Length: 169
Image (cartoon, rainbow, N blue to C red):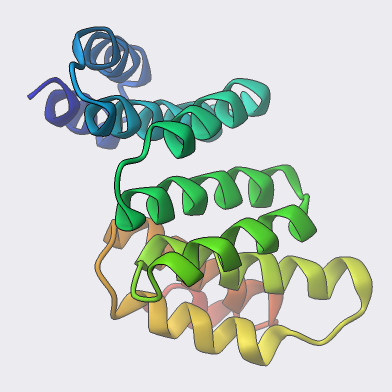
């Protein structure tokens, strides 16, 4: 219930309230899976606030506390997303690929992979945009936070010089 309240506050951009709820959930968690979920939410919160060191620490806590492949895949996807936000696309891609090995239908992992590919295109001159677009499209059809999956679609479209397509979803 604390995580749900935190999510409600998060999506209303009430980040302080969300942080309080997530921290309370972490402090009262009795099971490793509950701690992993709380860490993952805290990771996302810090990432959205550009507090990357804190985000990475929380993501690593989520990975360590995960009790299933699906949960670990989500934690690794969040870790990859944090690296994407930092502009560190090589570690982002590695973590996204690891998440996909655990759960190939994890929307967050596919989205993080798409953003890492698109970012690598911009940084290295590699042309991964076709693959990034395909991954972003796939992510939209998988379970996950739809707002985040749509954000990935927009980012990849913008990097591919398709601003009109970036706002389709």
